Image (cartoon, rainbow over all chains, first blue to last red; front, side, top):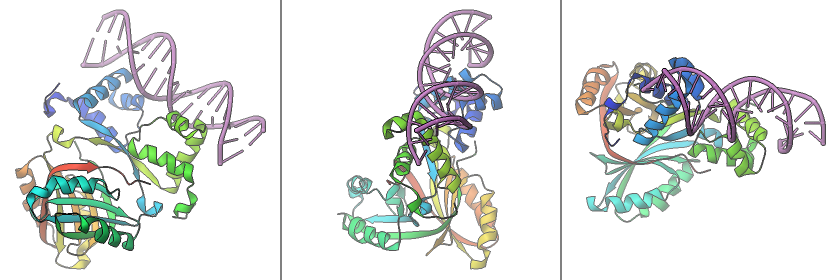
Length: 155
Length: 155
DNA sequence: GGTGAAAACCGTAGGCT
DNA sequence: AGCCTACGGTTTTCACC
């Protein structure tokens, strides 16, 4: 079970994933009804996909604005030297406002998704946390006004 | 129930959310044990938060690379005219490779998160789908080599 | 607002095909 | 690999506090 090929998934696995991608709290028996198999089969397939690592977990989707977090933005980071990459990334991981972190190729070395309560929270984050990390040369911020789409890939 | 203030949430709600943010399949009785309340209470609180719209759903987190989708990237879109915004967004929503879509302020009008199978799939998407949409002036792509972090905000 | 218990439903394991 | 069955756990509701 160490391959990383999609070939080991059959159409039943894909059907199960498609349902769970939309709502990870769907009961197994409900999936079983939709797929015309028994609940035990869903259980076995889900377990297999968790073991292979295709399923990594599940997340609640929340409206962060309703919780007082009005700002969502993306921040590209330029480093002074490419070799600072992992050191800087480790420090960034400590910052709880950063919810996604990517190593990227092209104009930036690191790319972040960040959630803040308001603009002054963001300003403080940039000035006092991000830009004081050693190795960070500059940052470039894209502020989101509205998220129009948040879904998983269609299998 | 039409307010969008966090004030209507008490510390029990926050505790429940904190647990569910990490794993949306946590059984209510398990949350109840951790929060020292009954299962019925968790049920009522969850229902309230769903009705208010704080909880919007739940998603399975999957390893897209293991499903044959090796490319994750962000694409910024410049429009010829700002007024094309909603028309272009509507067309973009039809494209299943686009899993997140934001209206943004700053250098781009629209910002996308995109999942593709490989570079040629991405190249085709850009050339044949995105750049043929009327009103799209130019696109700018950041390709992710590795996602190091994917989590929710800490409440 | 919370509790505790009942009823319906679900997750899980094991034996069978 | 899937089905069935059975048990224990979970969800959901509701009378009561």
